[in-house]
Amino acid sequence: MRDIAYIALGSNLGKREQYLELARSAIAALPGTRILRASSVEETAPVGDVPQGPYLNQMLAVETELAPRELLDRLHEIERSAGRVRDVRWGPRTLDLDIVKFESQTVNEPDLMVPHPEFGNRDFWQRELGELTGPGGHSE
Image (cartoon, rainbow, N blue to C red; front, top):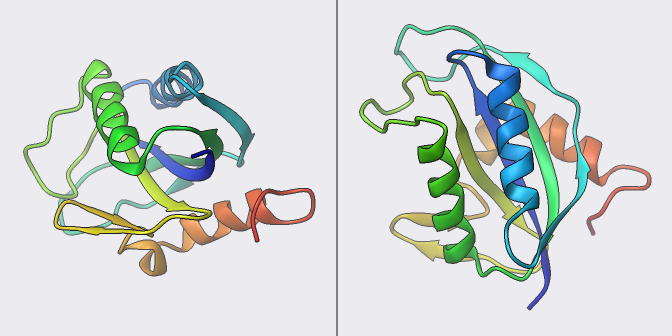
């Protein structure tokens, strides 16, 4: 089933712009997947109590044939290829890729919830999604 997924990209370690570019290229190369639109890149303060530098964030609207679980697995592979280490919750990272929502699907599993449970707590995600779904955008 083809669907539109909204994927949040974030980076606050190293060459942040290059990590976002790596993510965009790798996502575009996923099977049965193409990027429809990309939001502006914005710098945001980190979430949580771990001291760290600011993030660069962006959101993509992608048309994909991948099921939510397969997409998540592929996004985790992209994170690992960028040197992502999952050792501290909400800690600094080279690359963070989150499925924010799908147009037509929801998921409620212990390790995958779509829409993302933090969506309402991330103003920047709401701004970026609005940019993608506004006039000329792709959403309901």
